[in-house]
Structures are given as structure tokens and as C-alpha cells.
Image (cartoon, rainbow, N blue to C red; front, side, top):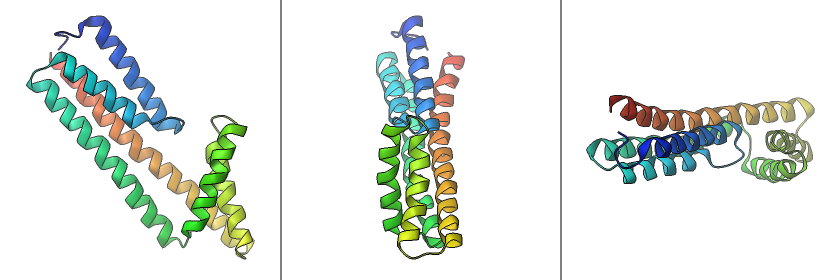
Amino acid sequence: MLCRVGTMGTVIVGLIIVLGLGGALTQIYPGPAIVLAAVAVWAFMTGGTAAWVVLAVSAVAVVVTSAGKYVLVGRRLQRAGVPGASLLVGGLVGMAGFFLVPVVGLPIGFTLGVYLWELVRGTDQVGARAAAWEAVKAQGLAILFELGGCLVAAAAWGGALIRG
């Protein structure tokens, strides 16, 4: 399915998809949006039923996993008793951490923010560690969700290329 895109265009789209997969894995930039945009450009330039089906499958995968990420991770943290204020503080400290220590500062800052806020709230060390550990597991689950949606989109695109 190289129609109007050509070999170089297909390679560029593939590289952008790989870039998006990196974003989903590292959480530094919006990987799912990048993957979906690359597939959309490819579908628009290629045209045809198969290209639009690939775009539809990719869009559904990215949207469902993005929404599912927030719903399931939020429920998991609620069940664990981690309050929303702890997550907010964790997010703010995570953003600061991102700028202070590129790449690893975001997850470290988020976890540290949740832990420290739980201590400020009056939770004991054990409870604060448990809340921080739940936050770490939630981060991992969110990454898996995003990566899964991006991989489905990438596989649909790759399958269309192989199918020809």
C-alpha cells in the first residue's frame, strides 16, 4: 500500500510511529497522538478502503486504551485508598521533577509527591509507602495501556503494508 505515499513517505511514517511508541513508553510526549496522526496522514495520502479501515482500527485502539487508562487506573487508586489530593500533588511534583531531572524526573517526582503528601496528611510511614507503591503500579498500568493502543495501531498499519 505505497500508492501515493511512496517508499520514502512510508519510511517516514514508520519512523514517526516508532517515535510515538517511544512516547507511550517513556511518557515524555504524547505517543498515542503521534502514532494516530502518522497513521491518519498515511491513510489520507494512501486512500482506499484498507487505509481507512486501518485508520479506524487505530483510532478505536488509541481512544479506548486512553480512556481505559484513566478509568481503570483511577479505580485502582481509589480502591487502594489513595486520595485525589495526593495524586494532584504527585502530578505537580512530577512535572517539576521532569524539568529538574529529564526523563526519569516525572515518575520519580510523582511517586515522591504522593509519598510526601501522604506524610503531610498524617499517614504513617507504612501507609505513605503503600500509597506511593500503588502510584508506581498505577503508572506502570497506564504505560501498558498507552503502549498497547499504540502497538495495535502500529500493527494495523504494518499489516496493511505487508498485505499490500
